[in-house]
Length: 246
Image (tube, one colour):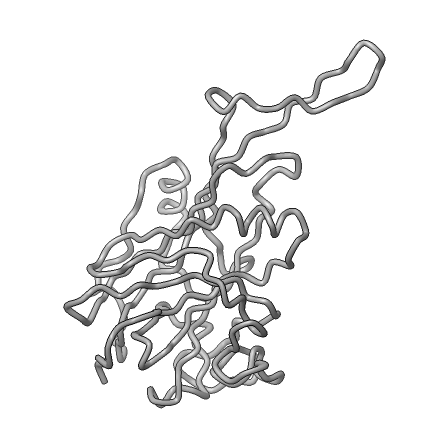
């Protein structure tokens, strides 16, 4: 995964200043399709649990006062910890390609169901914290339609690998047919109910360039509780026509 962020960009964002991704003129020219997104971030508001010692010597957790004790952390995965890629449908001609090192990830209308896969660590959240809000954000810096595209986020149910391809075939990362370059998805292109949860976690309509958000609070809490393993989220367009830019 190649992030177009420097340490100073990351520092500004962690301090609460939303940064913009690089200008399109700064990016290498590639064959762009559909909604092209900048690599995502997750903003979480959590409440630390403060310990108190009772008179009989037992230590208990005091509930947090949400008005005064909320902390916030922004998770911006770096190449060593986070991972993302696109799996492209057969009609694109890139169904056997991997996009693990591409600087762009993308989705399309349902007629061309490319999917974005993203996984990020939760180590930045203290183990005893209660997460009150977890918002996943992505920046769309290229859009090729005149109508909005609802993009839904789903929980991934199986492990997958980012890979080292850049619009090229590789044997070490996810494609339309395999989740890691070797092992096949249960259904090519990811199967609902087997490779990803068929119920969307959140849906946001994308229409112009800019930042977009998905509320994944319940899913992040389920990951931390051990209800589900954290294999990340998948995003795809859930309606729309047959528009496609070759």
